[in-house]
Image (cartoon, helix red, strand yellow):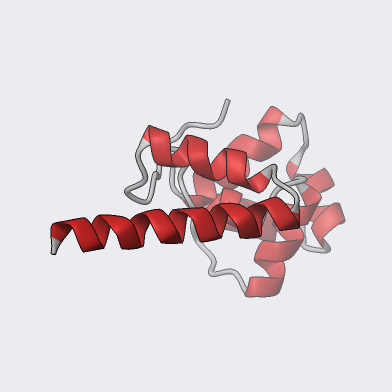
Length: 114
């Protein structure tokens, strides 16, 4: 399990070790030296976007998985998160219908406030 409080370099290390990868193996997958991967994991080197993408791909992750802590909720409540997760499961036509329904409900709410 990756420590939710860790910063980017520690998240790279945590994901790498959780997958049982050595510095050498990750370096080979990414096309960087073992030393460079070590520098990245210790926060001693800046990464390019390409390197971030390559590291994420090599670890089977999205770049955001490396950059954004797991416990970052962006101010979204549990109910809002559940709605968003359900929305993502809908087909495109259902998404449009739901969007229109929510927009209409919001308009009615605004009219009632006036």
